[in-house]
Image 1 (cartoon, chains in turn blue, orange):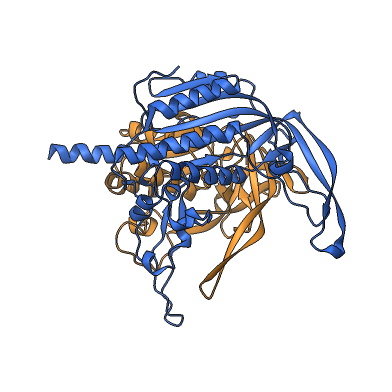
Image 2 (image 1 turned 60 degrees about the horizontal axis):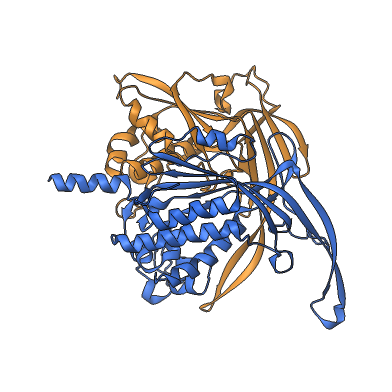
Length: 320
Length: 239
């Protein structure tokens, strides 16, 4: 178990094998038919398996994170308050945001800080009367892999549903929708050193430790919920049964990467555990409640690291 | 730089999940991918990681002259599967100040690998620790969710026939038809300037020259299966 002193986290990875029953969390559309297609991915061993895209997991993480941030008193920009997926990019045409900097965006919005944004550069156009614009960007701090079904450990059944058409004339429609069940390999990476930091230039935009800690806790709490209460497509009538969660949380407490290893491999927990060191802490878990306990502890006792380059700069300035 | 003793460093990467390194000129709405990152992607990843670990001054003044000039070779994983994925995207349309969101479908290939990918770089032997730190700290190639974990960095000379090579560098006697080839980006030359690669560092100025060039590369990978939206590639030496 974690101790009660503050653990500083540079980066954290969650490597899990998650079991979902009767879900349709991520799909590949209807292809013009009345059948909803499940998402499929070919694996390098030549088998084709069920998959769920990381985009949908990331989207739902962002929606819930906005709630956590608001509850903790962290500011959100007007775009994020309205769950506008463009985030800061939705604001730059407004006169009051015209000359905004990355630092100002990060200070003013916890969601833009955590999930990133991209404002594209633009050349001035004298005919249209538009001014040149600099590129403003921040990488997302939370990344989700595709969830990949373990070969021979996923199944699919097709269900016939009826629904009312778009108009009265269309009458009743028949739709075939898949319900999939199985064990999935999923990886999530959270680069906590980037909280309150312009990750293009690696400049710290938020110097207040309390503010960074609030954002960090909100991100971890949301990750906890994302895995324990699955969200995605079709959950209104096909909320998945979560029947298992095992894996390893890897915490890197100094500069460097937290290893990620696929749960498609049977020995993934052993391989990750073998990488344990003073700077690479590994917390294996076999059940949902064990995962819950580790995450709760991390929420309560951890804090985000400051970038190595920033600390180096501080030391040099102190010497002067 | 001319008299500095050099050695080849080999960094092995485990690619634990699906990944996606988009080919240059393939549309973001219908993206084709490379089976592994190309040379410019490797150089840019080292710059990005260097900024994170060492800060701008160290990267610009000490590492960048080597990063732009060092020979880079990439050995792809043993097997790579490519699948086309249909993804949902939102497109914002601005009309007279009003923004409306349209839902759209985009296509993107996703790759899945078996076996490690190796990046070889010829770098100063004296600063091996710095370069090893840098190579170990690369956490993704291309798209940020294209996770990678560095398993090992060692001194090892690459076997060129197991690495991707520019078409022009291949011998006429090698039959290239069975091998996977694609266009990749590489730095224009070994004198590319910092400002050209990192345009945000300093006042914005457009340069006449593109810091990147395009080249056809041949991968030591052969197509062993192709059905519908899936392609399976297996490593085979370019000989």
